[in-house]
Amino acid sequence: MNYPIIAYVLGWLLNFEAMFLVLPLITALIYGESAGWSILVTILLCLVPGVFAIFCKPARKQMYAREGLVITALSWIVLSIFGALPFRISGAIPHMVDAVFETASGFTTTGASILTDVEAMPHCLLFWRSFTHWIGGMGVLVFMIAILPMTGKGSDMYLMKAESPGPSVKKLVPKVKYSAVVLYEMYIVITIVELILLLIGRMPLFDALLITFGTAGTGGFAILNTGCADYTVYQQVVITVFMIAFGVNFSAYYLIWKKRYKEAAGMSEVWSYLGIIAAAIALITWNISSMYTNIGTALKDAAFQVGSIITTTGYSTTDFNLWPSLSKGILVTLMFIGACAGSTGGGMKVSRIQILVKELVKELDYLVHPNTVRKIKFDGKQLEEGVQRGTNVYVGAYLLVFTASFLIVCLDNFDLESTFTAIAATLNNIGPALGTAGPASNFSTFSDLSKIVMTFDMIAGRLELFPVLILLSANTWKK
Image 1 (cartoon, rainbow, N blue to C red):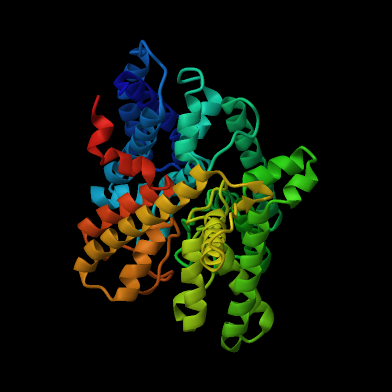
Image 2: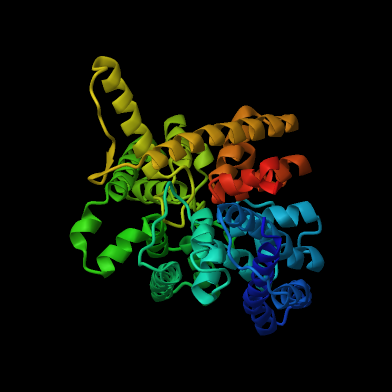
């Protein structure tokens, strides 16, 4: 294990976090808020170990898969702990477990909150809370790779693979650094477009910025106690469209940008993703139409919630906890499916569901025709054995983590619907659940143990389980 390179990268991470905190500090100065002192103190607490670590340069910058996984998992843990300090120091969230839960929920783009009165929080801390969504959406290590050459030649790919969501990660361009740059260029452009459209719709600048951060990162921290219900129809439609857009595999945008339209149109995952969304909207609209005065409002709310849940954003315009069982069942199903691989969305990913269905069809065909040799194809290409194995192992690990988390949180003695959906909402980085943690409520009533478990789930879910599970393996730390 190359411990010096781990410390070196974590040092850069803390320096970048200090840099990110400058924006909420400026917000505190603009609004004249005393909570800005907590941000300034946190910046100093990040810089002291951060600067020391980068000056102690490792003799060997080369890393391998093990170091890449460990660095990625530790980075998100460190990021969440230090990022929680402004909330704790200012007293806005006086309990450290709650502060780390809220911050991890932000960076992992989960949007699950323990706050009972969001509007009472200072503007600077609201800004930091939502900005963590944008930072975590594309990945903080991907951002660092785009800016700096932190590791040895070829080593950056291990960090990018460990942090990027989906069954497989491939470089958009030959060099990893340029792939990271391209990803962030597209991410920034789409973010700016949404911000402009919300401003055209006369949303206040502060609201527009924070809602855009949450949409881009598919996070979902609301800045009003009513969620997104008080925004205009135009503003809700813009948010809906961009939630769905950020759930699309960014490779599709790259292919369109490069005018490789045929390749972009051949991405079956994107078509499946859009098909699932269309079917879910149609079914829910039909199911809830009797609760609304007109079909248009029912369609708007159905589209908003479907887009919010499948992309794991978590915004809400209505209390879907009151919807009929079929509609709630569809939303819970979408929690597990999630968005596309290579997007800012969470969940199991549409591509994994496709691979599992193809494997099921293959096995059924094999039972009928044992002598038939059939290969699984994905987008016209034969699927690698490693991707199939990785998908199956991921599903197995997912079920084990989900079950263990569910049983521990059951100790709180909440009803099964609340407990089950709370784990689904945190492990899949959704945000709101049903029951006790529904869109009109929050996670504040859960015990500290449950919050720690769900914080673990949020980070594990964002990193696709394996980097975090690697930390718990004794073999990881052996020579």
